[in-house]
Length: 409
Image (tube, rainbow, N blue to C red; front, side):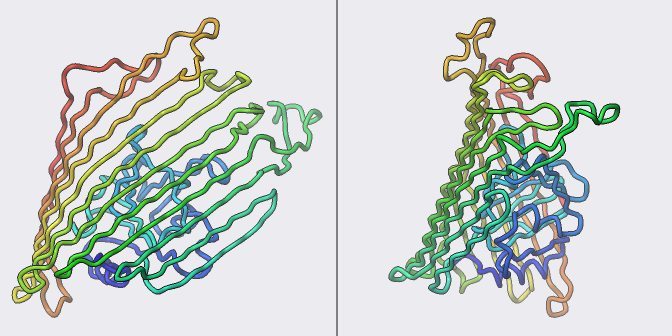
């Protein structure tokens, strides 16, 4: 059976690596956003690009957002398009806790990024219970969540639903670009086109198998949409964006062997995202073309651990393969028929990532002292040599670009 939150917390406390545990199950935590809760952790900074629902990216000890890996139940949430994770797309109502690693991490937690890692874990189906939470705020802001878990024969079923919406029509002082030299044209206006709506659903089924094995199937769906209000004196009336995320995963724990000392775990996942943009009024300052970007990621992981109790050692091996595909698309609605518009040029950008690692942890003095040695490696292969700053997207290449990295501790 997958490790419980109590067992994972005990592992984090005993870890020789700098790690912080954040509990989302405490009272009132689900009334806040994930960004708000993570900002309270020393060394973690969240950069926001707007208000409710706007992009928010994490930084650990000053690292860049693309250097921090964010995982949800072991699956990397970093975008195949931008290499970052938008924390606003992860409703905290579905989460149980987070483990924040500032540098290295045990292979028991999987891999980490060069700038640290945020490991997020969804809620577990434990005791039969049903909870409903509702809150309301200014500017027609509402947040509702429903959680239910129950046994279904020998299995455990969990369902969690969340919904947040807001008009965001607050009033503010508006200056038409004359802030420093003319205050006579300033006025109090109401924020327009700032609506936001999101919904999330988490389903999880955990079933025991003969011999002490278990299987867990999980589905995580998320949808968001909202207007693009603009900033400063550059305001937009009708521009909008929306996005979806679909994550499906399967986790299998093999029967323990060698008297429970040898354990194996395998999992696979499929992650699909869409990001859409519309500018129906062709407002200045934004792209005039509708966009529909699609990213897919699929992967498989395998880990094995042997606990040599007499010697106080734990040996682990970790393997993962991940295939990513990013398909940018403009003009699916026929925007190129507009006067002066160039036909869209795009191709599917593909990348294959391989990770491996081995670790040996020895404990002494009744587990008060531990010594850990590990080696990890990563190799990637893609069909593009990075984005271009201006102009049309690069063309596909016949040759593949390869890179590799190996580190030890």
